[in-house]
Amino acid sequence: MSSFHINLHEAIYSLSDALDLVGVTHIHHGKRVAYIAAEIAKQCGWLQGQMDELFQAAILHDSGVSKTSVHARLAQFEWENEQEHCNLGAALMESCDLLRPLSNLIRYHHTHWDQLQGLAIDYNEKIAANCIYLADRIDISCLIARGSSGNLLLTKDEVSARIFERRGSWFEPRLVDGFAKAASSEGFWFALEGEHVSGYVSRWIFDAETVELDFQQLRNLVRVFSRIVDAKSAFTREHSEGVAALARYLGEMFELPERTCEMLELAGLLHDLGKLRVPDELLEKNGKLTQLEYADVQRHSFDTYNILKDIHGLEEVALWAGQHHERIDGSGYPYHRKKEEISFESRIIAVADVFQALAQTRPYRGPLPPLEILRILKDHAKSGKLDAEIVNRIESQLEQCHKVALTTELKL
Ligand SMILES: [Fe+2]
Ligand SMILES: [Fe+2]
Ligand SMILES: [Fe+2]
Image 1: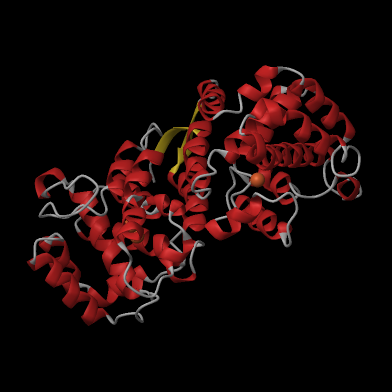
Image 2: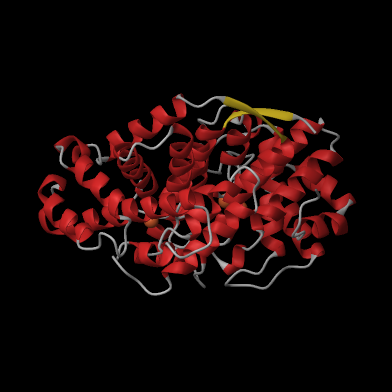
């Protein structure tokens, strides 16, 4: 098992970009919440260590939301079943050692302060969870209030009033006082604009140190995000897991180095990250997509690459994942690369992606049996779409490849 040098903040930041995409047009919510929470915490005199956890949790606080339809509800001040996305997000954090300390902060990020006080969890966790709740409701209030004026500065009184009303009941009083202090400067509001908030968050990355993660730790982190993608639609459940397992298996069949096989697994897990931006109904549509809908779906591999490309240490993974819809004859997207311009690893991901999708149910057809999958892959190879060498190799191990593609648990 090899090790990877990763800046954890950078990885969390990039991966949270994917979460932000679920907002479709209401993007950067996670980053704004992190900014607001950090500014309030600063006013309250928090220590650096506490701030770090708060920042990470704030950036990831809506990780329980994969569906664009659920995201639309986040834009209301109160909604039914709010707790569901908190529990889902907390469970995701629990599944990864590196993120586990954030789980209570996310589980309780919609719990009113008057209920939270009585819970038997650490006091610092309560305060941090409530700080995220406060920051989250501030951002949503801005969104609601902005509808009428279009200018953030003009909305500040309306937003503040909504928050102050809930001092002590929804929100811990000192946090609200911290917000009042921060909010008294115009700069606080101006900085909520997209480009400023991204800059604020980048500085946080800059300050972080690179850590050494072994493959298993990195994979567990990456799986948090592939699970979010796979949770988007019942049809794609475990699609990324299956593509990852098959891509690795193919790498092993070609006797590629162990590290390459590990990276193939990561690229498989991450290849559809950009799909978080695709409206749910398009993934569930039983029928042909319109031209406009197809254009929305098509941009996902481009988004995948963009999300991953800035994580130092994962550059190749970004490339392989981002090229999974390129085709040997140049008919793929988004760059129409031809065979010699597409790495062998990308071609493996492309074949694994098609194989796994054919093995799963889709809204318009049932799962296909191995021989039918092979027939389709061979057609694609013959017409110059998929790599013939890889497809031929699959033929020699067809049953095993099918089993691996439908695996639900990657080997530990
Ligand atoms: Fe939120
Ligand atoms: Fe895809
Ligand atoms: Fe895919």
